[in-house]
Amino acid sequence: MIIFQTGFNFSQDGPGNRLVIHLQGCNMRCPWCSNPEGMDSNLVPSDAKKLKVVEVCSLIESARPMMFSGGGVTFTGGEPSVQADELFQVLGYCRDHGIDTAIESNACHPGLAGLLPLVDRPILDCKTPFDEKLRSLGGDPDTRRKNFDLVLSSGKTVAFRVPFIHGFNDSDADITAFVGLFGALAGSFTVEILPYHEYGKSKWEKSGLEYKMTDAFVSAHTVEKFTSALKTAGISVIKT
Image 1 (cartoon, one colour):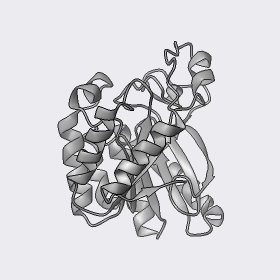
Image 2: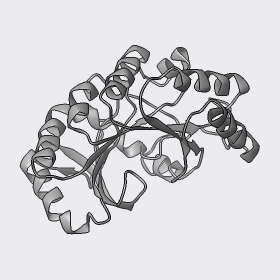
Image 3: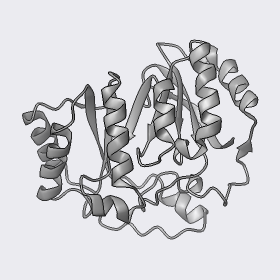
């Protein structure tokens, strides 16, 4: 497995203190990505680690003492399901050894479906309610729809995250469509709104990539409008 970053977060990518493992490679190309160094499976950062499955399991096992307050391990990226075959084995180890697991995914990769039964806490990005906009980022609407239905039908509570970007998905039409999309879903889920930030800008420059985002910050008023519309529709909105 190729891992470009590891670290601990408390109650940000799942409950408790969690080991967060960033897996290399992504099937999408979001211009606001906070981890652009993890997008390309072929352009691997020089400090990335190439580990065997057994070595990843040992890494997770050694981190157990730090998984306090109901913590565990969270796999993110890049897009973790790009390395689905290896991740399936690691998730199986975690399940067999009682280690809580979460996965943060764009939900648009076909490899995700086979992983979801082994994931305790699915965290799924929903970048746009419109199929054409999703395709413009490299995402497949049909695959996302199937993955949404699959995980919601499992009875697990899904944490949906919306990266909220001015000029991309913050218009009144976008907000109405988001509410319609989430309102039509059957199952247990929450929605978290993540307003645009520039935390990844320096990484783009360091990676030799052009950062094209301009005027992308969303106003507090628009965030409140979106939040209110979701709550009015009976959709659970959370903040972390």
